[in-house]
Length: 174
Image (cartoon, rainbow, N blue to C red; front, top):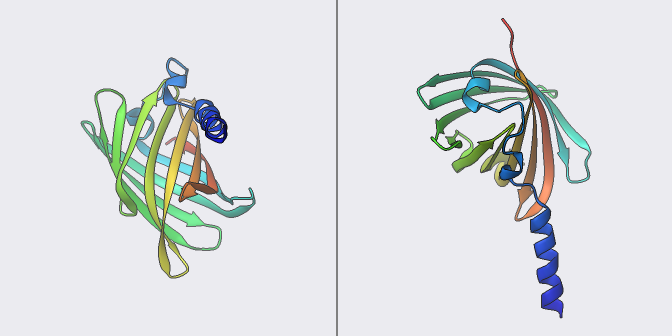
């Protein structure tokens, strides 16, 4: 009986999680290459497992493409004065899939776009108390307008959610 109840609970939890397929045909259509092109700016917060905001930050981004290969150069500015940089190397697949690597990403980030959403997952190495901590990120982006999206990321360690990041990313009008 215990195995049945545990199996039913796992089925319910997995069945309740969002799938990129749920966004097929939703509008506005998220064209990753079109949105992440040129200059962008993002404003975000990091929350711990209790939901408390632990950091605020701004990100300046410059994105460019040669065919289906792109670079997104991100400069992070935290409210405590810390700065950081991440340079994404992006490859678009023909079927809406995307892969990416970056200086602090372990392995390859893999994602997919459908309708107005983009979802990808990756492992990030972050400095923590003089050491490096590896965390898994489950990253969802939702296009709100042609020039603005909302990004929600859950952070987990060993399968336990330890935090969340929320960002608003906007194209910079010149």
